[in-house]
Length: 99
Image (cartoon, rainbow, N blue to C red; front, side, top):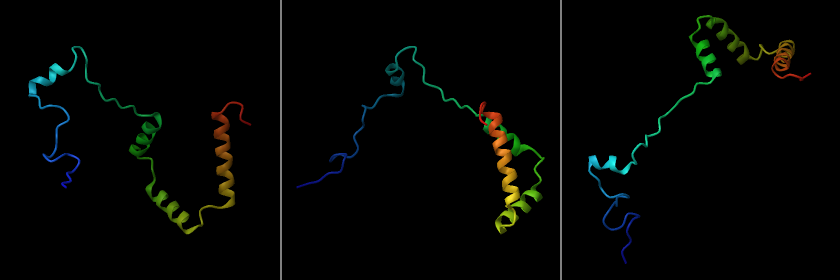
């Protein structure tokens, strides 16, 4: 008994018969164009890119806050309360009727 792989005893078999380079145009119907790739960049991505290019970022302050967060002294109940109030105010502004 002989067992052959998924390609049979003669190796790989092409799915389509071999065609010369000029024969590919005759396969495509006339007037049919190949689809073109498109990309759409969201407004959020544009904003993040703009922020990344901005020189207004104070890297020393960001590093200081990261150290404070890592050591557990940055988040206080007062700061969390202020952040929650700001978040709720922002959400009320974005969603009409939210009270």
